[in-house]
Length: 86
Image 1 (cartoon, rainbow, N blue to C red):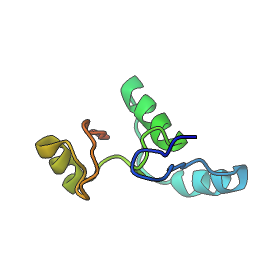
Image 2: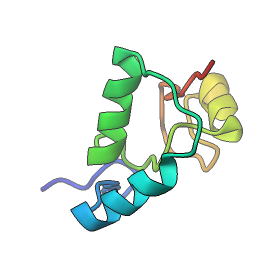
Image 3: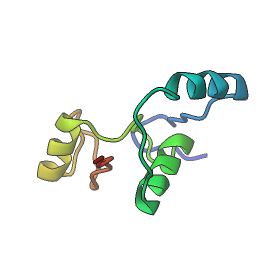
């Protein structure tokens, strides 16, 4: 296996017990329907396809990517992966 981008594979999938706990906690949080693009980005985050990302980009990383095509820590990252919410 080749070395993942950023040096390590970030997988965000959880086992069924943890998933059940997270679903119960999230039941009271606000929710909205994701677009197809957002669903694809979420899937790539979950399975490690967007390693080294652990989430959608925060403000600092977003600004750095838009300015220099790098994350705030200097890792090459040419596309902003964002969750635009209503």
